[in-house]
Image (cartoon, rainbow, N blue to C red; front, side, top):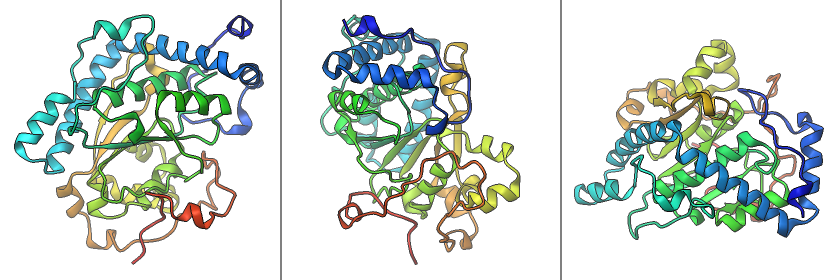
Length: 334
């Protein structure tokens, strides 16, 4: 059988930065080629491992603690979105943001699914950079978190867009079978929310990806509709020299005083999976207190002087069809 031929699974070494495509271990590439040799059977292998990861996550201390953080942040964001009072209380009840474990969620055939309550979904979701989840344990746990997060927040999977330039054809097939929408083009994070409340799930992505995302939504109204789950912006401020942050990642530097950040819990079981990960949102009151010239800034990032860019660039010029894709864009022009 296909599953019997697979190499033993090993967790990737602890890391804070995403590996570039050139530095992927050869053993992982071999395992991925073996998996793709029989795609139908091996989709089942990957889905089984996602189920196993889902059961582990649901029963973990990390998940119950993470839900407390998520609940706090999403409650504030719903209030900021000015959901009517009656609808707000109903929406909060229907988010299922409690740590109780449903018995059906730990059965052998379980894959986190979607049972959204009609009319209660407030957000869309975009996921960048989870990596090769078919062969990497860390990436698989990050995908499982996404699926559970969508279910808890009542976001239908068809309202979740996913992309990583490293995805294999097998992984794309698995994602489509799970019901999420796989993007076909590398947006480099340049996606505008276009007035739609949107959660961006970007664990351990390159700093330029976050900077591009902010650039493409550089206004009070757009940022107020966003949440970002990804590398701690406060951590970036601490690790990078101020002149480097301001020169190479100007949009992150300028918005630091206009956001609130809640760290995801750190537990030994998921230390390498969600280390340095926070939920970020942008209170309107804080954004409006930023200097007025903040919003006049419109420089397009180029990253020519960045020694370690940590993202894979889109080498192909966008076609006319690409330019008409929904939500895609660059920095707003004056």
